[in-house]
Image (cartoon, rainbow, N blue to C red; front, side, top):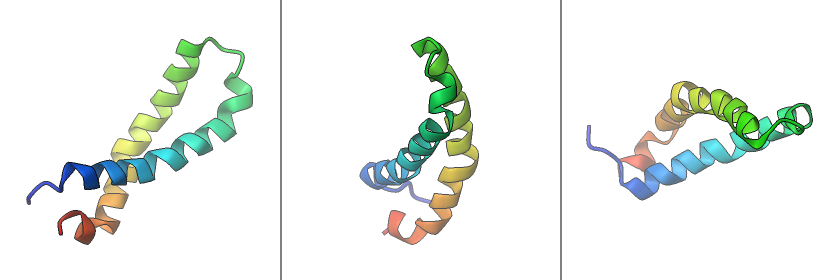
Length: 70
């Protein structure tokens, strides 16, 4: 199958990542706020990257399939 235009894929990633980062920050913010920045980033990316790759992007890809490939 043909790859979608990069701008459409970028919008789909933004639709997934913005709420995921917001929710993770809300849920973890207080408990990790005193950790060094590098450790906070490690924790957040350790959660968000697998969430994006294995759950959110495949789900949104199915939902937005028609739009992505128009």
